[in-house]
Image (cartoon, rainbow over all chains, first blue to last red; front, side, top):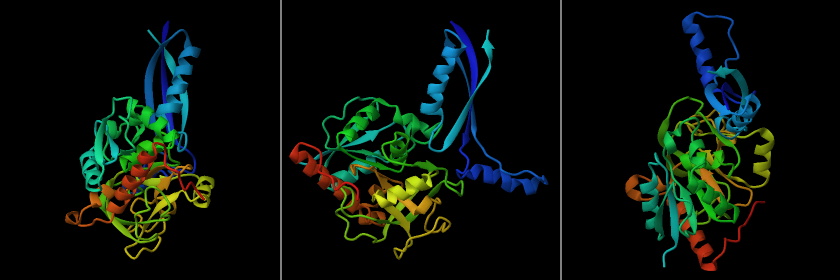
Length: 86
Length: 250
């Protein structure tokens, strides 16, 4: 048994309206920032999984991400290993 | 014997009492169903009420989807049982895949609480048959932050072709609105869709609140015919002892 730390990055799929991204873009003028576009606001979930090894842990994260953390109709996700936990 | 209709109570539901009351006004015997119970107590139809189930954490409706009572609702729906989701209940149905599509954040990014007008596209459903006419504007309130109906273009085309668009946002005169007409289509729903049916025709969801528009003292009783439709349909299903024969989709 070992512990593994992952991040699941959930983002709106391409083409899905992202009003939060639009709102961020809308504030750029006030900040005097130029040259920034295509802002997409998502969510990052970090978690620790206890499993036999990293591959087994990843299977758990995959299921969690596809069934709960992201809605596959509107969101994409990417799983990132961020190291073993002591 | 009045027909028994269940109203699921999640932690965070806040329209369950209104829904129980409206069902009783329509002649049903309303039954509260706690989210932790795994059976539906033999009810003839189920309503998922508005509110903020499980705090709407992560995404509106998603945590509720995995509650014990929803497993029972999924089986009930698969057997042809009548299920109506209102507002947060619609979001739960969409997250559970019991109706097509998803509810995105309102385009304005604001929580909206005000009256809107919707019109039914069809009267030959268990949820709309008591309405006087299709296309007639019905005034009732909305109260949501995530009500922007979304599905991809192919799905939207299929929904329209199959008659699964149940309600659309219209203006006060009953005219269909565009996605950018924020006065009439408050959340920017694609094709102004306010409510949909599943393919079999026994599960429906809508964002506006018919139960909060079921008595004249509330300012409008335009929603009561939707509640009455459900109660009458459930009554027929209960009498027959089997699921209602559905008009199905076109």
